[in-house]
Length: 399
Image (tube, rainbow, N blue to C red; front, side):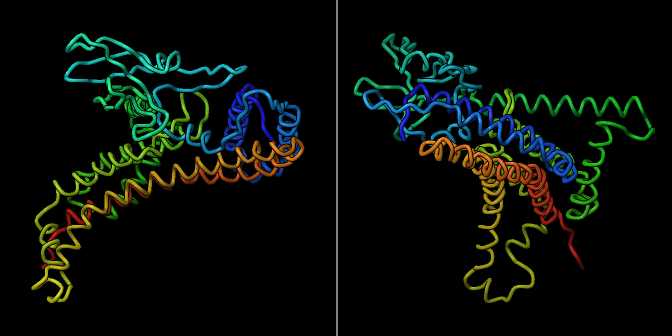
């Protein structure tokens, strides 16, 4: 079934409403006792969503411009980075926060708001080098899809040096501010309470910090070197964990897919890579060149094991980056896929869409509960693997 563009905007608004309801509920529904005591409210919520979908008008206008609901575009729009932060859609109008674009061309800096690309397809300014016309645009397809490009006179596209404040960058500033505030509050609590038993936020952070120190760092790294690596391990654990949790809150200014961005996870993995190889002792490099416990014919005349060990130094950060990126992104895609299935079925039948909403609601709540667990597990796994790499790089010689 087809529907016009106006109804498409209403569907996008419904997606945001349902996401807010489902994500907020998932924080409480993960407890079995809550499910048992409040099953009537859960059923009522399901029928409320059915009513929302059942009363939605899906007009079929054969003589007007029509387009199908594209679940793929909706999902990709939510998980990819962008130059603006879309908040919600109200009566066909998009409400967004437009972020600053900062690009360099031929050594000259150009700054403007991303709003210009919503008002017009292109942004025309004066080239600061030769005073000619300079055209910026964001193509919707091709090699530079979704990125700011310069349109040359012959129609070709060129990428400028882009350091714009995108959605993920803005969300990163927000999350880092939250992390700093939390740690400052905990630090102040320690100073004020002294030797007293911790309470509130202090007790929560102390539990996690002690866990990272005793159950991750000290078990993977020798006692002489553990203090050298501990600050990084604690920082990366809380950074990933808190950003994973903030990504599950679909309300502005949260909900950005920071740890589901390969650039962010690759940067964290590179930190681990450089710390491992720059602070590694001679025993670490000796084992790479002359791996112990391996037959001599795997080392000479063809240095097979040294080659494998050297390649392994570069594959370890690659695995770290891809694992975190893939797990977080997959969770968002699954949730959005279940929600999108409601509207896909509703194209065929409004009643079918209402029935599908109940089934999708149950699945989304289940996946959200898993996502809360994954948010912690991925922070733990990244920290644990980093600690293991540090342990191998700082092991002592055994006589």
